[in-house]
Length: 504
Image 1 (cartoon, helix red, strand yellow):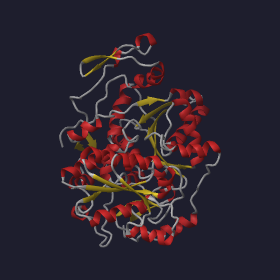
Image 2: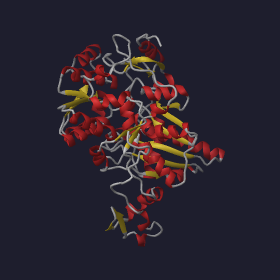
Image 3: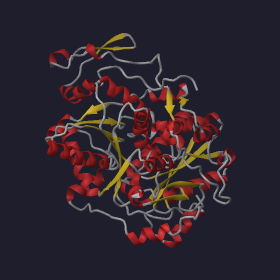
Image 4: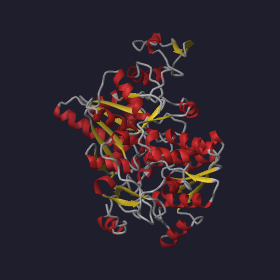
């Protein structure tokens, strides 16, 4: 791979923040230095109020990384390999070729530390990257805490979340290989809309199976996907054998990410011009998301801060990995020593209540067997509003890192999460998606502990997307009709009993 630095020595666009004064409104009709050219701007009072803390944080220009980081390269104990579902032997690259583009398969199995980001991908990243690191000063004031809270905000992307960070390269590599169509699953619709967005840029067909619970709860995500040209089906559907099987057992099934994956994989495997794209879980997906953490390390360095605690929500785990993995690298070097905490929904607690075992990534058992924390591949979570976190397993690499002791995990019920979301929205101005409300709730818990102990911790939070298309969930909370949905122990026992018995 190219160099030891993940950052481009010749960034395409930077601004010199010293050309803008943040001390007085009279200086704001000022100028930006963009690519060495002076640009005059006039900003509204409201924008000034919102932007001031973000500019304070990003006082030094941050470049877009030009390489992704692969944590596997720095782990002394490598993660267990995926296994073929029939032979139980380690999967070979050719076993994956019916589903994935060749370059993505290479990235899935590589031990290289850094992977070059294609220039064509960086060109698209420039639409929204680098993303802001913002200090939540008003939330700190609301909580009366000595903690300093920062959040890395991915909601500025065209699709409104972190998901385009991997959708763009996945579609790019498929287009380079001559693939005509890609298929996928989506929960809340963040991944499906991101893939639809990417396909519209590279002229590929896109077909999405959206979990029925979210398909009904979030109609505007479906419209967003359709606007970018995607075909969208509720899952389970009567289009696939996997979907029909579920509907025969439960015609009113709310669906799950595992079921939706089975449907998409079935279509990809049956069509030579079609490949499958996954929005989380696999190594190459987590790899692409490390642009988040690489940027954030430089942003924290620029303001002289080091996180004591890093918090992120986890479903499949891609946003959490994207922020935390580069920091784990620095932790392994002995440079920093933050606590790294994953937060999952109480109704789908794979890290805190699941078993670490080989299991299928989908409900129908069509994928390779992966060593991960799992609740069982046919476990169907209750229809919580954080649809993107309703997955029965955890990314194998995150599961491995958890087993090695480099991170910890907790679970939080959804009413506490939405309570935190309201506090965040009314203090910071951003309405978060239901998924990152788990990180917000955990951050508030820690900030309150700091208030009680007098500790001045630096808390870094992953804010993976906005909730503009999730307002029906907020309506239920504000009306008092949102309730906590917890898993049933017996239900998990039944599901775990069906996990394949594989010798370690």
